[in-house]
Image (tube, rainbow, N blue to C red; front, top):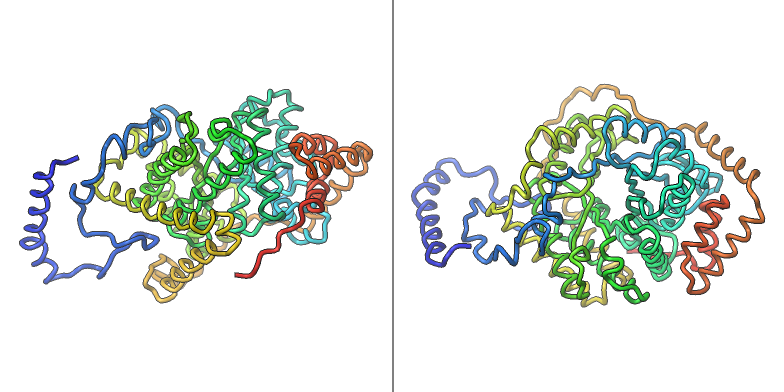
Length: 560
C-alpha cells in the first residue's frame, strides 16, 4: 500500500515522535496500565498504529471489494446499503401458545426474522412427559413434543413471508421435518422456505454437551440433512456452524474463529465423503458468531473469519462457485458478558456488541435482553433489544457505508493477527487428525478451558474490570424487576396436551412410520423423508429420537 521509502519515512517520524513528544509525557504522567491487550488477550495492543504495521497488506489479494473474493469487506456487493441485516430476536416461551404470542409481538414490532429457542428436553430428544424432563419443561425455551406444537407456534404466521432460525442440534432432522411439514400444510412450496437450522453437533461435544448420539452417526444425520435440503429446500441454510457457544465457554476470538472454521471443514469433508459435490451444498452453509465487548477486536474477527474461510475452501476443496466460499453469518450478542448486578448496564453492553457485529458485516443479528442473566427475557426487555438494532440501522450511520473500519491501521493489523492465529490453530488441528479426533481426544476442550480459567482469575483478582461486578459497585440493591417464569401448571398443561395428541392419532400409522425411520437408520437411505413421514403422523420427538438411540447408541464422553 505504501512504497518502501515512504514506509521508512513513517518509521523515522514515529521514532522522532516517541523521543521528542511522547517520552516527556510518559516520564511525567505514565499510562493507565503497563500493558494493554484485546478483550481476549490476543497479543499486546500497541500505543499507536501506522502504515508500517500493515505494510504487507495487498489491497486486491487481502481486502478486495465487497461481494468479491476474499470477501474481507463483505459477502454482498451492496451489503447493508442494499438490505439491512435480518433482525432476529431469540424467543421460546414455555408453551407453544406463548411462543406464538411472542413471535406475533416481535413481527408487529418490526422483527424481520424469527429465532426459535427450545427447552432442554426437546434439545435432548425427550418428550415433556419423560422422567428426564421433570422440572425442565419450557424453562429454557419452548417445549415441542409433536407436530401439533409446531402448528400452534406458527399459527397465523405465513412461512413464505418469514425467515426462521432454529437453535436445535442433535434432533435437528426432526425439528426441520416439522417445519417442512408446516410449510406443506400452509401450501408453501418447499423451495420458498427460508431460515436456518443450527444442526452443529461438533460444537456440542466441545462447549454445550447437548448431544445424543456418537460423533459418526451424528455426522451421518447432518449430511443426510444437507442432501435433503439441497434437493427440497434450497433457500434453507442447512447448518449454522457455531462459534457462539465456543466463545461462551471461554475461548479467545482467534480460537472462536479457528474451531468454528475447523468444524466447518469437518462438515464439508463429511459431505464430500457421503458423495455430495461441494458446490451443491456449500452455498447453504452458514455460520454463527458471538459479539463481545471489544468493538475493534470483534469487527476484525468477523473480517478475518470471512477471509480465512474463503481461502480455506479454495485451498482444500476447489470450489468453483463464489457462493461456496462466502462466509455468511448470524451474530448474537454475548450472553456470558451479561451481569446479574446492575442489569441496566447490559443494555449498553448489548448496544456496543451489536454495533461491532454491524461494523463487521453480519447478515443477521440477535440482541440479548438485559435480563437474560436472570431469566427468559420479558416483553419489555425484548422490545428494548430490538429497538437497539433499529436505532443502529436508522440513526447511527454505521450501515450507510460498506466496511467502514477498512483501512484503519489498527483494525487491519488486528484482522491479520486473528487470521494468522486462527490458521495456526487449524493447522495444529490438522496434525491431530482433524476436528473430530481433536474433540474426541479432548484437546480442543482443554484449549478453551485454559483460557476460561485465566479470564476468571483475572476477574477475581481485579486485573479485568467488569463494571458493576468487581468495580463501580453500588450499595443499594437493584430495584425489583419482573421476570418471566414458567410454572409447574404450564408443565402439567404441556403433558396433558401431549397425551391428547397421542390418544387422537393413528397409532398404526405412527408405528409404520417409525419402522421406516429404523430401516433408513440401519441402511443407507436418507433418514429425512421417513422422519418427515413420522412427524406428519404425529410421532413424538422422543419416539423418533429413541429409534435413533437404539440404532446409533448414545455418546458418553471421557472426563476431561
